[in-house]
Image 1 (tube, rainbow, N blue to C red):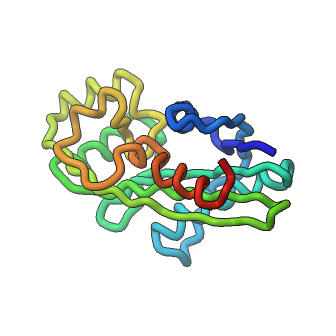
Image 2: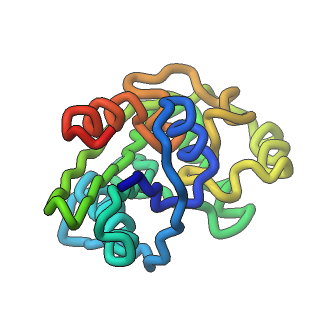
Image 3: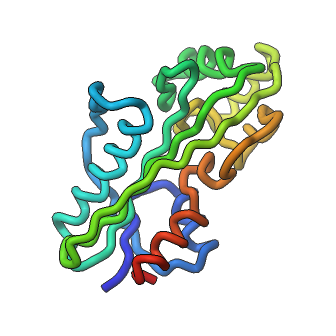
Length: 188
């Protein structure tokens, strides 16, 4: 029995390695459909559950970790940018503002009839940034595969004025909370 991370995110992999949690990766092939009947925290939690469930179908004896991260501004989910203009619009909207980063995590082991999940919410405040800075940042390519169009662990650190909550959750996985949960459930 082992742990499988149902994610292709290199940041989540790095965080599990940092926490010394042995695992392997099986990418979850689910279409990320949001349940509009849920609030935004419920939606990100549901996505994490969907990802973990898909992999758990293939590996019922393993412990599966699914995760999803969203950025929320004024109650609206800001996903990964569709293109450079979308990234620009997102970063312009976040400039000088406070937003929430929500990471949903799901842990499933079908054989043990175990399913648990949680959502970690962190508030991030951005500095005001110029259009020129935003365009330079977009030209680096970094924002293009990230929720909210920024990576706090990369050049996006220059945006962050303050953070209230879990830095690692903003990276994509609240690793301390996850490790404590896995330990509490006797899974590691």
